[in-house]
Length: 562
Ligand code: GLY
Image (tube, rainbow, N blue to C red; front, side, top):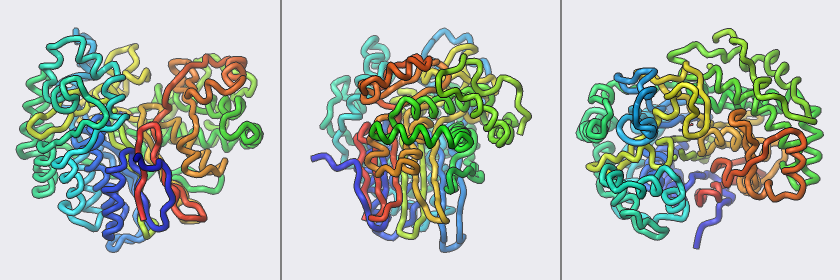
């Protein structure tokens, strides 16, 4: 029997997008670990049970808030372990590549992975347990195996870049043989298939024993470089040995009495979230009226509410496309983008009766410089919180496995601007400042976020799904905070998405089928389209009964805790 996607826990909880990963973290919490110990255990477990979403071949972001660490006292920080470009990366490296799939499939698509360095940095600096303790559940899952679920099967079968792409041409099956044979059961992959990954267990055991060195300098590094170079990529051992994580202060914003900590660039999600919430706050009159109408309609689904959030999002996504990239390479106009004056000026343009021409969103005037995925949320018994989002980018990343160690390498190159005038696999336009360069991190939509009220955690949220992560995070936050929905309703309910370009307002089926809704939005000028799932979200929220935790039913997860 499948586990419920939402539950309430008295002391501590983990909401990940696979029940076995949530359980791995919950066991660590039960054994006395803090939120960071549990997040690291959950993430390593996800590397095994969600191998197409994230894992040790990818990267991520972690937002940490610990009220009272035994050594450090209060901790509020973010860890950036996003993958970065190899030394051979060049801004125009894909412009004339005859292979249209080069930025997404195979060795050229791979950026230097950051997950192992990031997780171990978090554990060593902010955790309380040993590598062996927190990695034990993942090692066991990799050795003993786990049953593939419906989401795994659907992701492999339905994603046009995975099974349908491999089936088109048998040479592709040979090129990605380990993926084809082991992760996809030679094309027969079905729910219930038991996937064992003794090779990844061996990698995790080496990392548990020798730390990040095992991955970045040892036999795993050698195997990664061999796999990438055999497939036409130019990664070197030095690329791996020189990888570094970085810590930055959280991006802070506030909304209706709450303090919000989220991820700064190279996440674009935190900035878009902050801009949208600030625009909504500056038009409180519109927001209150739209919410009243939405409540009558059953919650967060009236034309006025969807239009208001969409219009604010279009301004923020337009600025994302024009002005954002890795802050280590370009000075981003963050101060200007988040200034009261600018946010108010964009919010003042919102017309509740109609949409504007696409070029009217955000600003094209230079601003003064100043800037495949899985999310897990954790709360520990001391009120410590972690929001962590990780990715290998598209489903099964670059498709390129490291056969000796049973994991998949990312295709994060496609989150850079790779070809002038051409959107990436998520349909996102990017400015030239997001072109590939050595040690540069591609712009991301991952939006791990923690909100507090009166000094206590109110919610821990984030999701997977490319740019739809940002829409999901905004909407789940508003549902939990303003509509006071339970975690179950805030996560389970229908969502919508607009990323400025393409100029389409995507509605999940429940909204598409709601009487009169699509017509009312079309009457305001929206080009209305369909989207089966607008992100997959994980939320933990405080309630009078305890910690409500929900793992998005769109991905088949379940929370765990005690
Ligand atoms: N690879 C998806 C993201 O970082 O936005």
